[in-house]
Image (cartoon, rainbow, N blue to C red; front, side, top):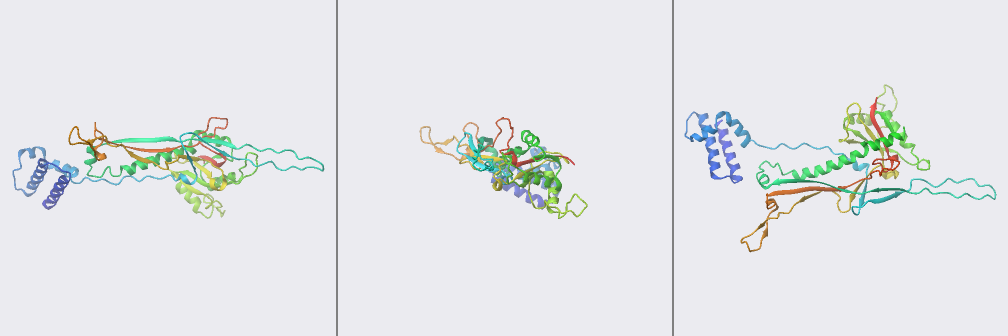
Length: 378
């Protein structure tokens, strides 16, 4: 035990020397370890009454924990929402709203013309207009110079990474609300059985969703190409999705019926989706790249493709005389008044927001690209 205490004493002395502790502090810590060594050996050594007043054998376990055994465990690992697979990216040149047009109807069908008859004029449906813009999203953090320099645990070493993760998490929550906001849900619910259901996630419900996409029509009622590609689901449905994807036979039936939806869609877990088992929601989306049917869009400002970590320049200068020139100092010196080191994480993004016209589509750029289920019905 005395050998262990001697080793701990050397470790603590090196730690204090590394951070530049003064000689008084070094001497006090050495006295405390010598006092405890004398208690173990049974040989009394004079270390001063002051040490015995502030340090007893009952106190020493805390001292070891606090001053020698301090360490940082790794932080939690965050889940990611891989929304890039089903959300169309766009770029705006500035802060003003951009306008996008899309033709969502084919030309008129031909008509029979009798002998000496004259063809009637056809009509062209105007393109659909949509607008969106980007906004700033930021958060500022202040750190004292003393806290940064006294960080012997490396507590602040990962904060830059954590700030980037905070920006990513905020963006994921923003995209998650595209599907689960009340206006989007109400719009799909009002369109009927080809756009929404209340059923929980099963093989039969996936099949119904696939057939709903297969019956999509354009603004003139003509059939258009559309297919279910992605199923965005609550975190509590991971095993259910895996069972549907991996089963050769329909997992919910005690028959030999073939599982025809196996491998026909890509599941995406949304860790920010809210729900209580067994009523867990899910959302079907097409592949906009294949169908030219855009359910959701995420716009970024030109020149800002990702979050930025910014630091305020120190307003302190080092001088040798009041009238002489000054030189810059390291940013860790912070600001002149408080010594705070100020950093900020910033990002820029936006999406389509329904202008409040008669359709009320929420964040749906094209409602044909979505299919919602509340997951409440067995």
